[in-house]
Structures are given as structure tokens and as C-alpha cells.
Image 1 (cartoon, rainbow, N blue to C red):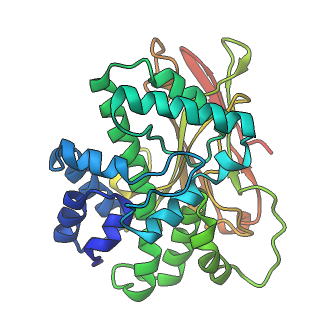
Image 2 (cartoon, helix red, strand yellow; image 1 turned 90 degrees about the vertical axis):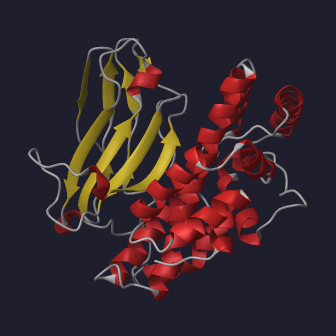
Length: 331
């Protein structure tokens, strides 16, 4: 699937990154594009390119800088901050602004975080925590956060092209619907609203939450597990679905990413739709980061939604201790 340089510049404002991605295009799938993006960002873009990308992001709670290279990117940034702005107060925004200033004075670049689904208090807590890092460590973390943002923006870029160039998918309608779910999960409702409206059926929405949700409980502490990375993937492999004997990781496509809040609940991992697309899904938890001394570096829960279940709700929680975990289908 072919893209222009300006398309990739909206995903990541590094000129080097955009040029290399345009040269690597066309991409046969979103996963193909994400794999290329990771290689280019971490192996071909230099320090100046990283800083160029960092500098394009607005501070949380503020408009995009005047040197913003893409109007699309500016709109996406606004959408990505929607959860933070919705949970902000005057005092929390003031404190966030003060800490951002301290951060920039220490490190020389803006505090960068994948803000999708995160409240102001969560962002502020992470800023305070990362402020104590050594500059070389913090620079690497910022680069990783930029890649998270880039991946989610690539997912928003694909549905637009998929409608015009569907040669890589035998069913462009389902591709558009799948892409719509990826778009809405990072909160960019301003740019996604028209696609979401077009992709829905005439049935009025009866849901008040996404069809797939999760939360994490730390049973060893008897409390919710806050601050844990969570991602939702869907199997889109061209051949048979993953099984016990065959698990092609290349067939998984990111649907959404979030971090559990103080109650152990993840943010929105997909859009609120009446009918979830049937298929095989995977929720993965970064348990190794949450519990470094534990037995599990990560936990993935794989489950199937059948066509007869597409209007049902699927709550798939994780009950975790350092040496065991369990799950169930809840409500």
C-alpha cells in the first residue's frame, strides 16, 4: 500500500523517518508498516532526527507548536490528549506545566509520553518518576514513547488508504471496520468521527463501553495493579488462526494500548461499537515491568469471539501474583 512522505510525517515529525518510510513503501499490511517503522526509527534515524520528532509534540494541555509540520498531526495530538484534558483541573494543569518546565530544563526536550487513555494524574505521576532518570536513559525512554505514538498513528493512517487501494485485502469492508476500531482507541474522535459513522449499521448504539475490557488485580497484595501496560491485538493472518501448534506472531495486529489506572482498569482498548468483529483476540500484560522479580515476563490471554457473540460484552481480567495468574470471562 503506497503512501507519501507527508503521510508519514504526520505519524512522526522526523524528516529522515518520513523519507525512509516513503522509500520503503508500499506496505502490504499495517504490521508490515509497523515493522519497517521500528527498524527505521531505532536503526536509521539519528539523535537529531529523534529531537526533531520530539520538538513537534505539544505540551499536555496546550496547542501544537507553531512549527508543527502537519495539520493532521496537530489534530491527532489533540485527540490523543482528550482523556488527560477531560480529567484535568486548573490546579493539576498548573502543576503539570511547572513539572514540564523543570523537565525541559533538565533534559533539553519536552516530556514525551503516549497520552492515549491516560488521565492527567497518571501523566503527572509518570513525569515525576521519570524526572529522576539519567539523561541517557530518559532519552531512550522518550524514543520508545515516540514509537508507541507512531504505531498508533500508522493504524489511523491505514483505513484512509485502504478504502482507495484495497488490493491487499479481499474484503475492504472488513478492513475499513477493523481500521475504524484501531482509530477510535487512541481518542482521535475529531478525525475518526466520519469514518466511524460510515462504518456503523443503522442500528442505534446501545453500548456504554467498548465490547472488550479488562482489569488487573494483584492478589499477592490484595489490591488493584495500577501502572501496568496493556495491549489488545487481533489475529489477521491470511492462513489458519493461531493454535497450540502454530502461532505466527506476524499475524497479530495492534488494536489498542493503555495503562491500568489506580483501580487496575485499563483505558479504552477499542472503540465503542455495537457489533465487535468476530475473530481471535489477545490481551497482553507487561507483568515483568510491573513485577520485575516475578516468574512471568509478560502474560497473554487469547480468546475467540464468534459471529453469534458479536453483540455481547467480553470482560477478560487478570488475577496476578509473582508466581501464578488466572483469568475468567467476566461481565
